[in-house]
Length: 129
Image 1: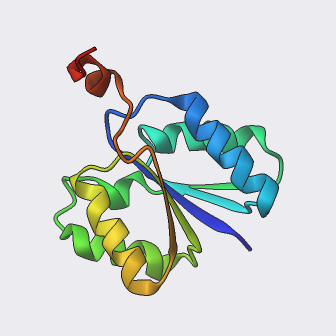
Image 2: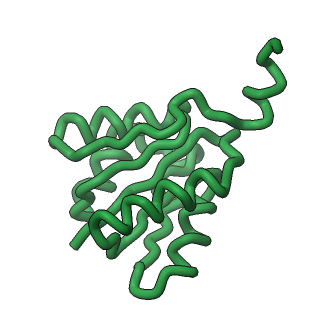
């Protein structure tokens, strides 16, 4: 079983990049489950899971929601306690994702950072050419 947790910065908006990365990972080792938070890269991963037969989608937006009065560190630990996540793919990083990445590192889960400098509309506007 290959469970992949997909996280991304809220501003991340490159759907094609998410699909490309997941296609390559799926070709190397069949992805059985996609776990995501339901927005940004997670929403794109959700769409990818629906197109790929046999991939089970696990959306966990409520667990990661800011208004949930549980500390982010505990939320991150709960994700790894509930699911046997083997890989974390990150597209950009925001404050909430750092806790997930720290927990993954603490548990020895493989982290694959793609586009850690999120190539979002917001980021592209700020670049000087």
